Length: 229
Image (tube, rainbow, N blue to C red; front, side, top):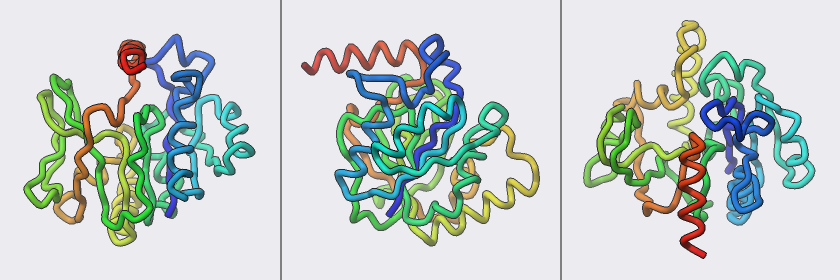
């Protein structure tokens, strides 16, 4: 079992905090975001961790010695969405977690006994242009829709079993060969082909994952953590 952490982006909406620091290394309670993720993974015995880096990539080098992670450089980090980051590590997708590095994890939701492809999902209200999961009583994903409403969303943590990963890699190769991937997120490979995939939802409590996409998000997280002390 492995983990892929996507950390190549510019973090433009978090400026000025990301002018000299990659978003994944922004500190929460005096620890970089990505270190929470790495330490939770290692608590579960998941030691094979690949981090796709790009913007200010040299700042991630210390993680190799500290945690034994592998770094993969995305030299197109300023040109494409995260589709290209996953393209670079597509052969690592089978039996692997995929994690967005801009997520603060309140607790360890990783499992080393997980067997089926899963989106970990929190419930959010008053979302704007968010990716929502549509699923039934069996928790199997029927559709993924982009909308502005309340519901369970893609929360930046997922797991992919080998058969599903093989199909997704095929979709990635097709998109790459077409050249029409500049504006794609890697989750488009799932969203646009969901009828061909067996993917399930694991419902999480509200304060399980918190995406930091803006300075406002960061300030809100600080308030949440302060109230828990």
